[in-house]
Length: 595
Ligand SMILES: Nc1ncnc2c1ncn2[C@@H]1O[C@H](COP(=O)(O)OP(=O)(O)OP(=O)(O)O)[C@@H](O)[C@H]1O
Image (spheres, rainbow, N blue to C red):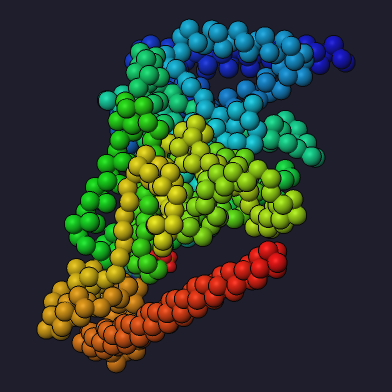
């Protein structure tokens, strides 16, 4: 009985094998005759084409261009085709099952290897595969894969028939990408390229799986052999560059702030926390002198386009900005406008949360390029101003009271940060500052005169920008933004008042903003005029009060000086009288002595 089964299986496999082989070789034969376009897999199109193809539609491993196939209905032949394909598939599966059952794994591997070798001789295409995860970094997606995904999403997803929709995190927009086992074509310098997305599924799904046992997604590029060089040397670089550019354009910008150094430990340590950066300030909404604004805009644009220039002159690609001026003059608004202009992230560095210079360096290394590192109110962040002076004084006072010294040390520790001025100077332009590129470092302060000159010298803070009280030019920008007004009869009064009194753009903006539906542009301007007049009156009264206080102080000083003089003269008189008495005593004594 067993023998009979063996013999039967032999004949069946012989029959199916020859049947299958004849089918397998037909595409090659037809290809040689230039008639049959090949496909990777059966697609909808073959059901419709009317090109006389014999045999019609089978699963082959060879890709083709279907674009030149004319589409029309061809239903009567279709049923026959379907039957043939069905039996072929059944045969292939049967033979494959027997092959896998009867032959050991090693043998199967060898067969596959030789089949691939043979196919590679006749296969007129080149395939390049890009895996989502590289074997050496299971937790990080391959940069090439991500770039290709972006490139294909943007350039080819409109041609793909099955798409995957991903909702971007923290955002309501939907990003479409090719679904698994989908194919799209791309064209580069007249060359046709096929991209397929696919995944390899593990034989057994482990209960506790790690990345290696999960589905592995990949993109496969197929092109004709003769185009191999141009595809590998030019096209791939083009795809990667495009992918990066799309990422920059579509990425959500972030506003980071540093965590306290104590919270950096553990596996998931994060030095920076972030939220999505959505500040609406732009250089259009920023009110300042137009000439000054243009100068800053040019400076920023020039910086962002000067990668090669910085390399040529041997400088790391970064630039320092010092923004100074009274509170409410637009320093923070300008930083947001810079970030929006250049599409950079912002790292808002809170110096008091940084333990020491080493941690400051670690934070710097953890920032990305295309970013603005901001230290607001640098004069208040740490006592950086006097440290150099203090050190000099300390070295002079060699022997200091140990109790006083200990108390001072304690006081310093209580401030929570041991970042020093030299640490900060290194942060800005030391060796470590060269890691990463395309970065702006911005300091803001209300009291520029308090800062150590070393901190703000050119090369560290390359551009010093003063943001000051509202002038008429600034007001005009605010009036346009807040009230849609370019001119008004009341502008002349406002212009005069702005020359006579100081008001910050923040206060002017507050007055210009309508607070109810009844308020219109004119009432807002009147509100501003009233406010300016009040401010002027307040300033006048303050000046009077200051003058009175000054006069009183001077009078008091004079009285004090006079009192001191009287005391001095009294003391002098006293001294002289004393001397006289002494002389008298001396005489007496002398008299006594002589007596
Ligand atoms: N130059 C300006 N242009 C447009 N709006 C401004 C300007 N200055 C101030 N404002 C308005 O005033 C508000 C406060 O401004 P901002 O926070 O930028 O000032 P600042 O100089 O950074 O103040 P501080 O020194 O207190 O941090 C902003 O929300 C903005 O609406």
